[in-house]
Length: 462
Image (cartoon, rainbow, N blue to C red):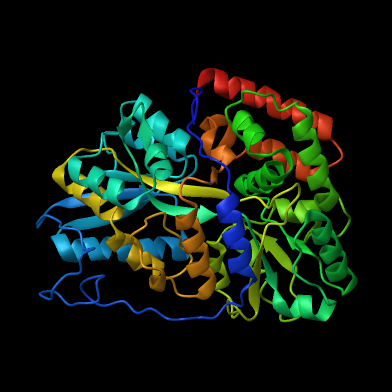
């Protein structure tokens, strides 16, 4: 969700993914279960014949590992089930260490205190690069690299490399170009799923006229606002400019940025279009932005909420069922094509040991991802994960689109930026867009602040 002055690897435009997603998400969503077994993700008990996809793991009886990540709530609980599978298969004991954003600062304090976790899940390519530059991250071993080469497209492999060396395995991906909506609200409003930004504004007006606030925005978490900007900018300015802005090869004072902010202001600046108004949105964290869209029956706090496929975890905390009460459509086209923005979390080794390398090998295999895929609210870039592992039709189709796209996607722009600009609460792009949400009329002032903060962060590499 969320880094260095060096040129960032980016991957090419998302025509294939956009087409697949548009078709996929137009389908009705139906739940289809997938059960877990007790001992192995291949559906067999210990002692059974493993499937060809099962990765071999060493015996690690009596060894202990710590794994740090920023995940909370259901996302953390589901990942712990993956770690439990690793424990069953190796005999190791794995402890989850809750981290805080920015995770590089959190890890720095742990390392300074002589207690780094063995493995960390980093949510930004820039954070991976920083961990390498600080000599925290260790190169991945042969077995982990073999799993990555076997199971990932070249684009996902390269994002985990620094200067040609594989330091990270992308365990989790996200499609961050989705808008979820309360189906009952749409039905009452006579609203339809929009395909363009102009259509989205019309849909918002229909929802508003029916007596429901159109949008819930988790503005207390600045990364949600960067995702809004990135989708508008990618569709409107195009992939080449997106890459250049991501690398700070063009300034945030560029006219293309002004155009994107003006487009966002059409929605953010319309009175009563945001649940709680701007002030309320800035006090709403992402999980609440989702749940308040799907609670309250036909009169929720909002009719729509923008964010990635992972929002299903939060929808699951309500009584709404994905596919009936909770539905989804692709982020509408602002320019010529609908955007497809991806994010991801990468596993890196901080304390090199056979046990730590084995855990990252496991996380790079289809086995680990299959465990979490079955639990919902999760998407893997791993080609070896069977589509049937995903618990509903939309997850299956989104996963298929991600894999079919290969290298044709754009990674989250703020995740590519130096952490001080694109990944720190209360600073840089997060803070500047929060200020813009509060005052969408100040486009020039917002551009000036964004450029000042970007220049400082890219110049220092922090």
